[in-house]
Image (cartoon, rainbow, N blue to C red; front, side):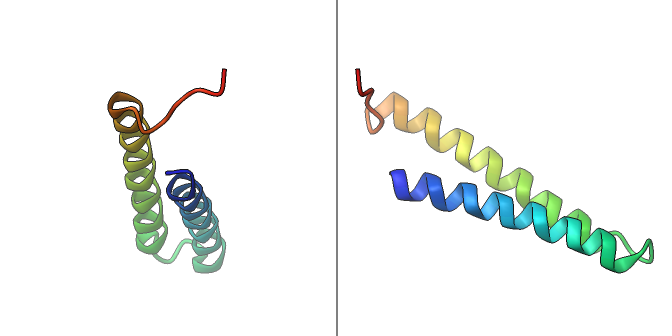
Length: 65
């Protein structure tokens, strides 16, 4: 579970960096690639949120206290 969460966080950061790169590189010609990268980031963030909620509900995530 821990590795899946870390992988999703890294994918979110890579997608955000890719969108930033597309915004600077395209110079206003077409925001299509940047919009797709940001849409992917939002989808990954929602998936991570649902994974954490589900993991807590099913007991896959336990506290260290």
